[in-house]
Image (cartoon, rainbow, N blue to C red; front, side, top):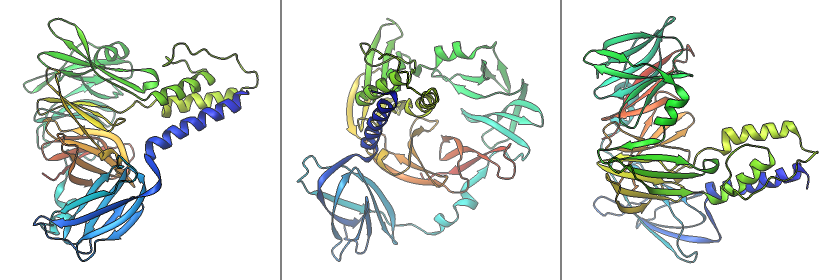
Length: 439
């Protein structure tokens, strides 16, 4: 078999896996979905617009609707002029012959004024110095730490909670940004080195630098640190395996906390890596590379290698967070969330589906206080944040960052989302803004 034919076969296999992951289950016959739309007083709502996947319908005089669909998971949107919009994801039935029954409760709108005044009253320019380029920022306790450039000088700058400068320190040129480690430490990052920062009263201290590669090899795997243990993250073959290991501080003994992997993707990428001479650890160590094909195209291999590094090896997304004194792992590949005590004892699990909403950016955000969780979506450059109840996986609030497109490095403190925005008049300038979120 020629290299080109083999490569095409591998591409088709990867494409089929991708389509399966993004499109979900498809049934050969339609599944009946029946539902009722009600308000908070259990009164039936007439004329609500229901969109389920590609299907559209309105609730009848009794608030009921019936439709058919054959592709799951399907995004459900329900709208009515007197009520808040309702969003949910409908999962496939266990049996394809089953009927899905839905009961949808809509909340009444309080006022229209809040929705039309978002840009003028809820978006604030945090550090209003128009000639200051903010390279990166971090929320630190009740302050804000900036890495910024003014003219040709670079600074570390501390601001108070309202954006007033406390102190700054001049630093060497071309910093990359900031890195926060699992212990709460903050580091200034350059392409070749990294410096730990210390904050003492109204000053900024910087410890001796270390090489970037060695420091990140030590710090990056640590994701959670408590008084009892630390939790380390490891990525397996092609980044399609995620493993969390708990290490006890006293015994130094490691124990597996959780592991998840996409075996089908690993097998396909094994073959893809072999066909394109990509030097990566394989999921199957017994797989042997076939003899070199004389008809292979070096240019095609180069393109495939770049596509692998930039797209195909994107890590499986199963992040871990400490929320409200518990540990949560959100395994989006398996549509499930797992809850552990802070000591690492398994408590329970539940199903999640918010990641099936359209335009999900495969990113969860947690607020600085470690009490709220948000899923990130993007439509036409505008970011939507859906607040997720971490105990149930259900959407409880929705906010659109309406004033600025493509905001960078979103961080959340209290009731505000902070972010960087590139000034449309000067591409070399980033400004820091914050927008109030729904409580």
